Image (cartoon, rainbow, N blue to C red):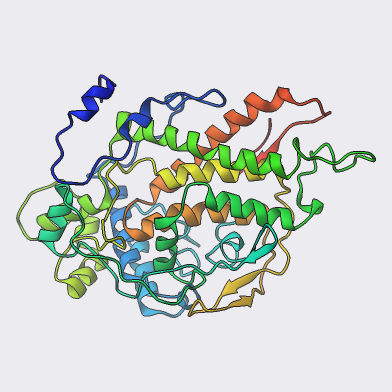
Amino acid sequence: MKSGNPDDFERIPLGGERKLVNPQAAYAYEMAGPDSHQLVTPPPPAFSSAEAAGEMVELYWLALCRDVPFTDYDTDPLTMEAAEDLTNLSDFRGPKIDGKVTSKTLFRGDIQGALVGPYISQFLWKDVPYVSNTVAQRYETTIPNDDHLISYPNWLAVQNGSAPPTFNEFDPIPRYIRNIRDLAEYVHRDITVETGLTAGLILLSFGEEAWDSNNPYLNSDTQLGFSTFGAPHALDFVTRAARPGLEAAWFQKWLVHRRLRPEQFGGRIHNELIGAADYPIHPDVLKSKAVTRIFEKYATYLLPQAYEEGCPTHPSYPAGHGTFIGAMVTMLKAFFDETYVIPSPVMASSDGLSLDPYEGPPLTVGGELNKLAMNVALGRDGAGVHYSSEGLNSLQLGEQVAIGILRDYRKTYNEQFEGFCLTKFDGTTITI
């Protein structure tokens, strides 16, 4: 990693058959927008901190609640107990109401729009117009209790680079995303640009009323936007932001932070609690109800993984999914009206077989894009492969990438254009 020499990477000794994921991406350059090494992101919580312990408690509860439908969060005993346990932690940074974690804030992100309405964004539920077809967002998912790496020998083998010893079992019926397990599987097999692209297609289906008011063709008497400030422009920029976002994340992952994955943290908690090791782990997680519940169910303190292979073979922080969706959502905000109210909102039934009308506060484009970003980031937490603090920090790293690309292209247009206006994840509004 210090030399950056491609030949040195080929000489890395592997512990098993699993290869490292793309460490040389940390050295990539870009012709537009920031280079991979140009940006910064805050350090993650220290291993021994109360904040890190709080993140692990949340991950244990996410594993326990994977099969609870979002529609049941207000009444299910597990989610109610999870909210109480998280409230009692000394340093839990998740969203709260009057100082308490509730069923309305549980496992959610604390950014504008993420706490309004259903847990899942409209952009993951509404039908997607695709060429001359309409695609329903029902996805293949895994069966209930399909959890992995809960045997210590299996866990240790995977840490040492072996192939997964068990395999995911799939539900034969595709479903709308209705619980954490479904969301985790969605962000397991997605390809980088797909979520941003489908959100863009849905936004385009709303018509010109959904375009940002700065679009120079909205009030033109003689012209329409197309190559510039039309659908090709918006969709191109959304998808082109994703890969530079990943490069920025990969620089931070491999050359700066190299944070251990949650499954590795869980192994340390397990060995600490059985007396096989002595680690500086904060007692908030060691004494939590979540850890007790995990042991009661699995006879181990390991963090159950939703994926057969467990975590990817690259460092945890920042999150690749969080960074690329942060970049794509920022691009969508630059082209579309964040205040536009989404028509005919829906929510999945508890079995994920149908969509029901949503009745509640209005859902805006900006709020649902923010929620989409948090869904993608926190879906990886739900799988057990990332921590919650990595969500917002990774979104903001991707946001920096997208803003840099927009800034580089800003002066390349002939139109009278006042600039790209968008609301950042911290709530501030900027014009580029």
